[in-house]
Length: 155
Figure 1 (tube, helix red, strand yellow):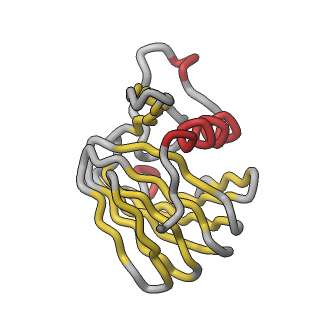
Figure 2 (tube, one colour):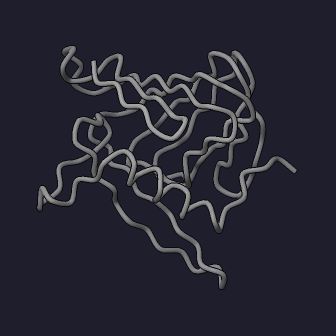
């Protein structure tokens, strides 16, 4: 299993290609209070299941809170992100190779989309230039940048 820990976010691949899966992965995420995953979308569906804790979630233009035991289904192509309201653990179910596309909004409201590539992440596609792969720390910095135009607080 591939475990990565940085900046209050620990991720572990539970099921993916290395375990024989060809279409679906399961990703475990432990997040410290305040840790955020920025605005992004995938080319396939994603399911987020809260094992314990509380998440402030934005899906498209609406925000809500998810708590222990709740499940969120995110349709393909739908912008979403979250911030842990307290120490939380979630499972993410998604489509292998669906890609991850970060979404940035400037102060005029214009959006810019950028695909992010991570070696070993089951959702990632393979870039044409292998130097395009980023490290987990870089992804976390990009997530923070993407949240500037998308508040996650439930209001």
